[in-house]
Amino acid sequence: MTKLHRLLDDRALIVLGVVCIGLGAELEIYGLAGLGVVFIMFGMVNRSKARNR
Image: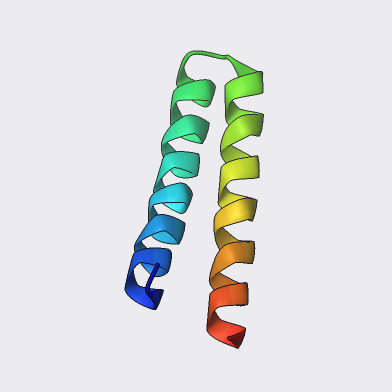
């Protein structure tokens, strides 16, 4: 995987997290909103790891 693919994957994770939070808040499914937070955290950690390489 190149750095570009890694960056796109991290952005996709962050976008997926935001969508999960929005859907979870709208439908009052708080587990889904929590899952969105986890996706965003993984995306941010992967971005910082990719930046340090």
